[in-house]
Length: 226
Image (cartoon, rainbow, N blue to C red; front, side, top):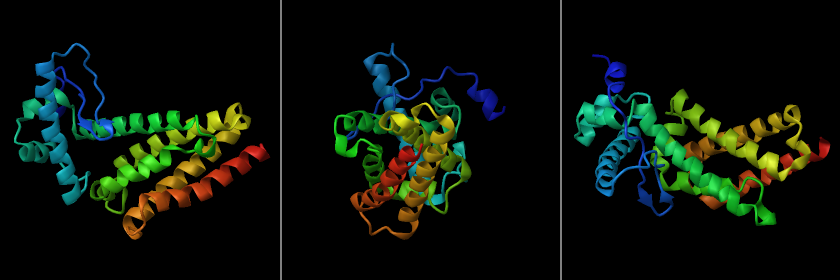
């Protein structure tokens, strides 16, 4: 039986909350869940999540199989597919929650004039710093294209929202706004990979300062030229 067919037989639970110092790591997609069900599913997903991250650090994401993940977690294939359709969905749950965290940082920063633009960047760099081994495997030279593409999409979304809200001159001009968005998001992604692979001695605060010193003036200049 194929993995796709097998996955389709189950009504998946989806991601459930896992509390960390940053708050909820995974978004809750099942509202009518009892507390005991929530705890049971949370424990299973924690096992799968931990196994995934351990294996990513060892061999990268692209080379992983679902079988290796469930072997490391010591859970059955049926259990895995009751929660996730494939390894990409397991990984994407983490990206989805990171997105929620960074968007919260954006909202909070809108009350402070001095750092409204690209306020997500410091939180992103700090998050990467705390999970450097995992992100080096996913974003650095060992990374696969699928993971890089998902992170780039997340960065583009965050940058686009900031540019639209903080720079009204570009809000109604997508043809002029989008090159700025892609330029800044690409710069962030490139700087992130460079930091992970080549400059590990720099702190999150230092790399964030370098990003902002380049990105904020460039964006403001583009708005003035619009």
